[in-house]
Amino acid sequence: MNLQQPNANDVTQTANRSRNVAPTSGLCTRCIDGCRGNCEVFKASFRSREVIYPGPFGEITAGGDKDYPVDYSHINIQGYAMGAKGLPKGVMANPDTAVFPAVDTETEYGWDKKVKMRLPVFTGALGSTEIARKNWEHFAIGAAISGVTLVCGENVCGIDPKLELDSKGKIKRAPDMDRRIETYRKFHEGYGEILVQMNVEDTRLGVAEYVRKKHDLETIELKWGQGAKCIGGEIKVKTLERALELKKRGYIVTPDPALKVVQKAFKDGAIREFERHSRLGFVTEEAFFAEIKRLRDLGFKRITLKTGAYPMRELAMAIRYASEAEVDLLTIDGAPGGTGMSPWRMMEEWGIPTFYLQALTYEICEKMTKNGMRVPDIAIAGGFSTEDHIFKVLSMGAPYVKAVCMGRALMIPGMVGKNIGYWIEGKDLPTTVSRFGKTPKEIFVCYDELAEKYGKRIKEIPLGAIGIYSFSQKLKVGLQQLMAGSRNFKISTISRKDITSLTEEAAKISGIPYVMDAYREEAEKVLAGRYKQPSRTKSHNTARSKK
Image 1 (cartoon, rainbow, N blue to C red):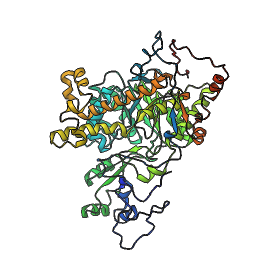
Image 2: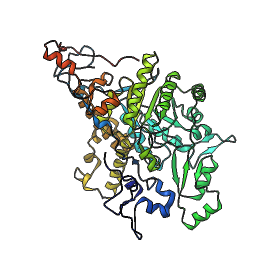
Image 3: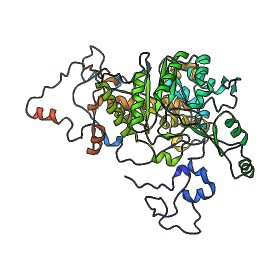
Image 4: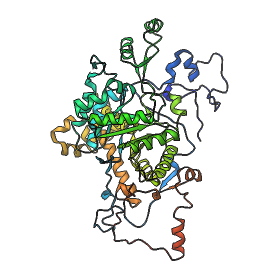
């Protein structure tokens, strides 16, 4: 494992003075009276609670950098020299038909009423953080034209400055939620969907009732947790008036803006921002099923659930309850995750890392299947950014895992594309971009493809959305190549036999065979002259086993 320095990190804009750092405390081995900084202890000595969070808020996303003993890099993808699974029915497998562009990357999820996606990926919950709000057009249109699901996260209605409530404290008008749904739908083409996530405050405000009645939304998501933190959602606000408004709406706001001493500190300039916190949820079997019934009675066709990096007990509850309630998709988010705002040390040190969490998920799913229970469709989240991540997650979780949820990796292309537009406008393109050209047509590989498809509507597609589409195509082609190499021409044919563990520890945790043992039995049959080779001409359409 790499040396961790728990007392300094770029996300908190801190650094150790000394080259020598105590590995446990993160303190410099020689701490000088008179040091001018800037470790976290130094900075917290005058900025206090501000140092808990990555910053500046609204300008960054952050991802934990703890180096766990075992992760997905300890798994490798198997490649084969024969066979082809998942080619269209009747197609003979040969070098002319089993080509990687023929790989079908579409997936679907849902208990009965399925949602198709062009790729087995979708966005993390883009909720009330400023980074999500101000980039929404790029994220939403990018997801829509890419044919993947977009998750509108928690607290969007609750923080809307133009929110209007009725006499019962329920939503009457929520312009920002309206904008978010309408923006995605403007370019939605039947692949993917937009779904809204709810926490405690959202439920109290009547978010489900509002999006169902106003927008006829078909899917709603319940939230138990996330990988980045084990407390509720958080944002920062810059004014005392805004802090007081959010407290009045029922949120926890710290420091308490109603206290006179806090108001004085804000006036003096010492306190410069407030934190708005969501409440902790409390899961009970009875309340969960009651809420599922309530949402179905409202008319929702699909209900999804997101849970965090909790231990095996809560994981078992999520999978079993989701099965019994016929939940359409269960997203399991591992540590450390990514965030728009989460306590940094919490991100680094809490929860079950994604690799371990997925291994536990598979174990639970297998036990439920053997007991005759149908397992809900599952998505895994927690630190993914590349096509090999997608393949490994699908393979390790086969046949239960249908997709990978990506947070920061799907946000970055939106921000890059947006900023390329600003740089072109200001004639300030960095050399990393200008070496490819000076106009969108020259810079974006996929621009002309989208212009041909959408015609005059290309002007309605922001460059950030084109960035997300470009990134999604990179994922698609890369995934097609990996799938073709492993002789899988449909997502549903990927299996646990298509990966191998590089260490015995990874094999022990995941149940994926150690590299020195994988296919050993078949190899012995080859050596003994008893191996029956699959036909080279027949198409193998074996899909994952039915649940």
